Image (cartoon, rainbow, N blue to C red; front, side):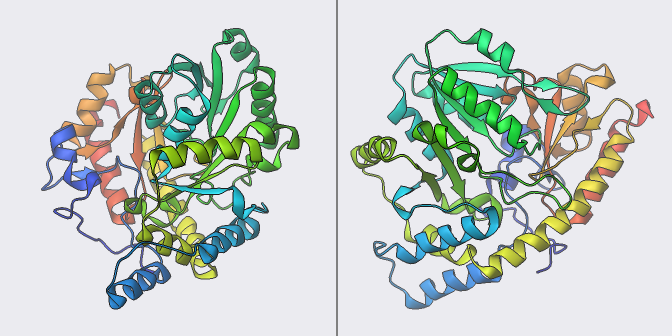
Length: 391
């Protein structure tokens, strides 16, 4: 595996690279794409070999017999996370945004409130509002550059109209690995207010060496299992997001039946390419690749943080997980329009705007550092030049 290899993704229907000019005005010719959360690395060889086997066979019919697929999921969760998964609890959706949307559809009604701890992954609010539900923002507390939860404040916000809470664990965009005590706090909050708890753990494999260990929500508190829905996927871990293959894992049989009914009503079934690739990824070879990836990304994290934090007024939250650096520009004294203009127009870097992540994100930008190190170094150099007057 060569994470330093520069692979030109322009002109390949890459959302990340081919859409940065239409959306952000960052020129394709010399811009850097650091927004969409996919990586600029090839996935493990075992995934490519599985796909090659399908191509060599040459017939692409409907997928059947998912035993090996579910066994691979079970092996991965047990081996990597100490979590035993019932194969009957596993549903496959068209990615986890789709999985989240089906959860909202299955477990809430129009007009219901759905709680988000903001700032948080922007697609959550998008699907909630599109479904005619109400986004209830419970802002995280930024304490010395680290997000924490304030359940007393959140309790005071609840009106009784809320029926679901969605947790992002590890947190995107803040990069936090929530502690077991914090997760217990979320579980208790869901029980106090009778909320279905959806725990999106798509980033759970992307934890840095030396960081706290990720704890699976299903292992925190047995008494919350009757309201718990787990979301997992190979897509972020192995850079195969284009397969749009995610898993919704529902431990409780009654809740599971409700989810299955919505899946059946919507006529959803998975694509064979995604299931074959996921089965190959959840393997010892995939585990070795992830370990090497996180060591490499740790080097990128250090390089980016040191260069970015040397710019007066800019600071990045310490990353414990994910490859998404959350940069606070409030110390510059600039408006969001001004610091964003410098990044996009002057440095020619396409990034996610913090306001799209909800309350608390207004002074931030999100940078994707899952790219060859030479590009990270180039981004740091461009940023230092764009903010040279502050230094």
